[in-house]
Length: 115
Ligand code: SF4
Image (tube, rainbow, N blue to C red; front, top):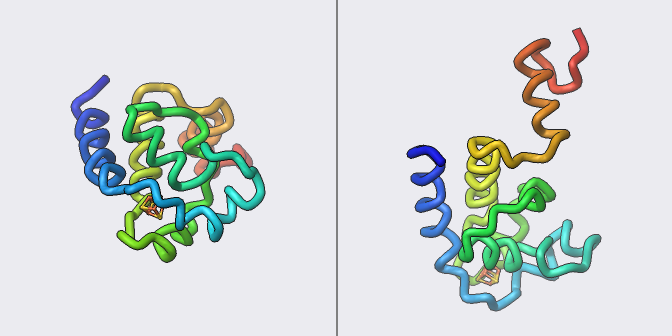
């Protein structure tokens, strides 16, 4: 763990702790509409992050901000999710596909590794 990931976790907590678990974000969330499992919903991700659970599932989000539009408290879940991805990368817990994309970007300038 690093100071950067500790700071990011505090910032994430500040965002997700405002969530009241009302679920109003779920019907409009495009990922939840397809996956139909709580952990893919903004509420599910907020609960995970409140409990310090940093799972690769946090990369399964299109950051569309649809949930913010339907949230009565206008919680910025997309910001919490971007920060949580940074934590996962910092702690080397990102999915292999992401690791590969980062490696390709560093070596070739694009995520696919094409020269
Ligand atoms: S709508 Fe907002 S407050 Fe309600 S569960 Fe979703 S993120 Fe939490």
